[in-house]
Image 1 (tube, chains in turn blue, purple):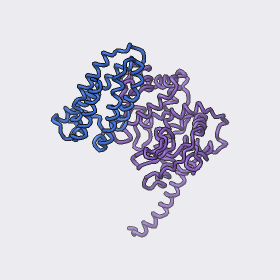
Image 2: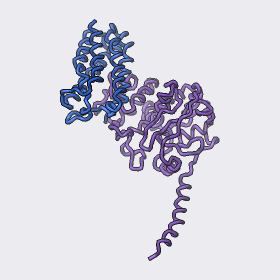
Image 3: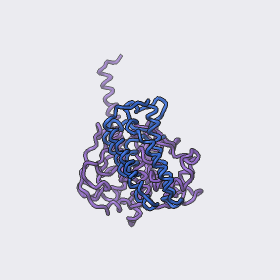
Image 4: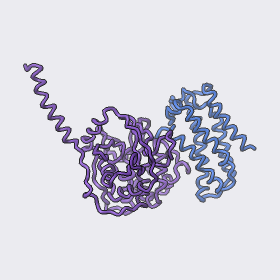
Length: 153
Length: 301
């Protein structure tokens, strides 16, 4: 149940992101930092899960659960992290490409793919299940980064 | 002081001479069939080199074509500074693909940058790197392409202003931009290092983006694989030198894992700027080849 709720919360925050693009209280720098923290929280799940998938570490449901909670917390305000004034930060650096805003539908669809892949990954009870659910989740990361993230130098 | 008309009259022969010189200097020089080595094609090797060469990354069909995205039916628009290109159909379809191409047609395209009709090819197609491959490997790729299902897909014309003139002008550019020397093993290095160097500099065409370009748009060899501006105009292409020293990867095994798994194992920078497709291709290579690539790359300080 909790699982469904958090997935719903992610979905809802995405929906609100579409509906209420303009409402954001934080400064552009804060928004950029917040979305970086959200992205990093996704990365933390992968960094934690990778050795488990490879068999280098035992499957640790509790550790993963903590990482999922951190994800939910870091990404809760997703809807307010992408205001039009956050294309460039003052001090904070962003790798977001202008396409995030010029192709808002494509960006929302890419994010929806991640939200859709989340429940299965979180439902995994062992390394095998985690491994099976991983491609859809990671595929969503990759597909979005391919289109909407600036290459790094 | 000579009159204006006299000056013009004097300039006309000069211009004619100039044009004639341009014409002569830009004549394409394709290979002829008798210059090819005798070779029995190895389709399995061809498939490997097909992935190493990243053919699919550019020669895929456009999203709205309704064609199988895994095919190399061509036509997906490729935005470049000179205009939008539509990479051709590489399937064996005789009308819209390369079904009617001879071996020497294929080698000329891959290694001389000369198309079937004798025209200079736009170097968005990285023949400048493929030129370093062995001709046998190139022929193996052709043999592998011939095993793929034929897809009928006539791709649009490139959207480039003054395309015939640009094509002709590429004949001049090739004097600085195309160094068609075959890869030579360095006897001081291991077989694996040499294999890696061969794959990186030939089929892999890493330098096309990871080495910056000179004023003449030729590879700036002094800054070999040192990174540079992204060809799309957004952001930078990272340097491939000193990857361990710069803290990008722990060791060769870490780099190989990045090639195989990319984002799946948290290597999140391997998706942006076109590397997502490159990583997908790399993940299809045998691990010995990936080890070789890692050994070679990590030797670059």
